[in-house]
Figure 1 (spheres, one colour):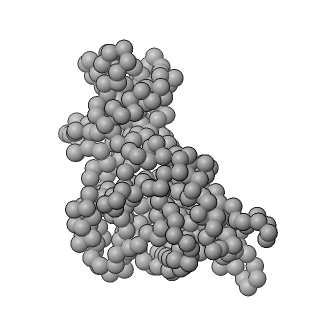
Figure 2 (cartoon, helix red, strand yellow):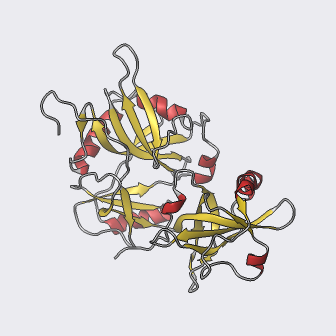
Figure 3 (cartoon, one colour):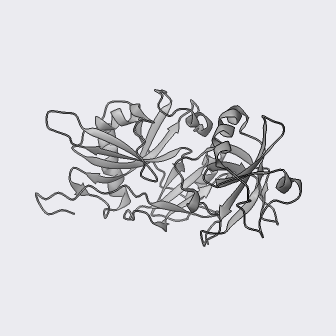
Amino acid sequence: MAAAGARNPFPRYDPELALLVAAPPTGAGWLHEIKRDGYRIGAAVQRTAKSKPNKATLLSRRRLDWTKQFPAIAAAAAKLPVEDALLDGEVVILLPDGRDDFHALQNAGGRQDPRLVYFAFDLLYLDGESLLRLPLIARKERLAAIISASPPGPIQYSDHFTGEGSAFFEVASAAGVEGVVSKRATSTYRPGSRTADWQKTKCTQRQEFVVGGYLKSDATALAALHVGYYDSDGTTFRFAGKVGTGFQTIEAALLRELKPLSRLTCPFATSARPTGKDFREAIWLTPTIVVEVEFLSWTPQHHLRHPSFKGLRRDKDPASVRREEPAE
């Protein structure tokens, strides 16, 4: 913390990440939150001049400026009762039943959609003071006070449950949400790190993959996407299967994005690539587009079983996409 009268420098947004686990942690000392189905966003609120309102900048997970994508949320953040602050949270489209709609979020960028909500779950900096070394529960208390003192709007406090994690997970699964994030109540914030202090448990099998090619059913129709992931070395690009459902509503727009990326050679590793007709008739791509896919399970051949396209992930770096497996 800064000495009396001194100000800590405004931090860079470098979000802490959660470790995938098979089941929520047990025992006391954990805060359990709903895992939202949207875009991870940092809201940086900074002073401009005493006579002018604050300025808010929305930053993606890769620290790209996404303020123009969600102008109503940026405007609401600028009106928070702070001199300057850095919030961590997630932008979603919130349905009346409380679930998120990631499909609808794909088309919401730049629009004043009243269903857009920013669920703030952490506070990293406030009025010249760095909060990174404070316990999570203390950071959330300050965050809740700021949001409760603000007029109603698209910024909402992400509440938590402090009971047994397995009970919360059962309720979340029954409600049809993506999953649960469990955080150690006493943990400090570790920018850019993925540790056991934050653990995510998924209600459904779902993760990001990189598109390495596609198949067409005729001259204009998209039949399937060839998707893959990188090994831990970051260089070996492995084929995970083909995704043939879920993209029909955005098929034309998706094809327009894919076509400029075409190449002559298969980007997948020789030992892990499509075979037969899926190889001969594929249109190969430079692997730069990240998509989110829901699936039933992995096959013994390390391919996706019953995958379905859920949306584009413009906030994710393709080079960082790995096969997600629960940690011990």
